[in-house]
Image (tube, rainbow, N blue to C red):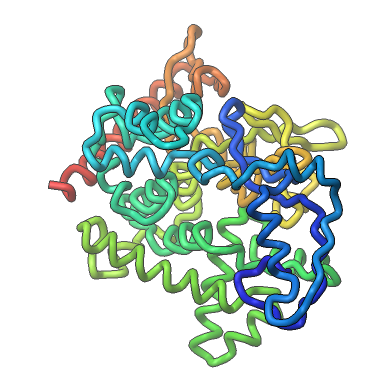
Length: 404
């Protein structure tokens, strides 16, 4: 409380435990972590300064001097604590030859593994080619003020003419979660969110329905009542509304969408297509759904077994009729949690996920270097490969045409 950016006049006593939950980045496992860690000496002085900011006060540091002496002078810079996907894309937009060489000249350069993870990710989503050159898609993504994977989702939504729900999903993932979870009303809040899900096993579609309902209520002058009844943050929904308008303007300016809303949304009613576009943006954030006799678990390629955040609609079900969940974010706390997930089928994964290669046997398709193995009739596998090739050509043609 006392460390908030505003000064609270009534605070005259501060208890400093010497710890804080800080976001770090595990480059080896490619996982952001949110774990308690010792603060820096600069943070300790900042906490001390909060006591008696406008009147006499006292600060009690609940750790011995020897622990304080072992503190780092300052917090690690953000360059060393977060994934580098967006930064590496912006570096390439400056026409730098080698991302790794450029970042190695920083005062405190990031781990080479962290840079490698970012470059591999950008290649996987198609924004860099094998020689680390920007593709047409990458040039567009570098112009969008969002994470590259969300930028790709926006472009895919524009190409497949279902931009309205995708604008809401991307704006929602860029802002705070609008679904409130009061400590004394968690069950009621969870039930309210589940109503928006409509049993389609998707946090993203629940967000779309919540936003659409809020817009309807706003037109009738009952927006705040709607938010209060459904445990939603009116301030966050307004922020999502503003971001949607900003993204829409950028896409129009780039020539990716028309001024005619009906043309841009001619396929927005197709839930499977919207689910596929969400998958295209969030891939390779994917977890397998493992069903056992009386339980269900989730596994990712890098982390093994993971858990779904308790406020996800998919945490409420005993079974999920999809073999995969695509997710927007994973965080390691005491375990690895995934948040904002959507169930997808094998077909959606093949057509809208990453690169698909043939396996050793007829009808065997592989993704993510063999982590995902799919077996089917050989003629069906050939049909999938041809259709995926056509979809990829469609996206490349649209992006190339607009960029030129």
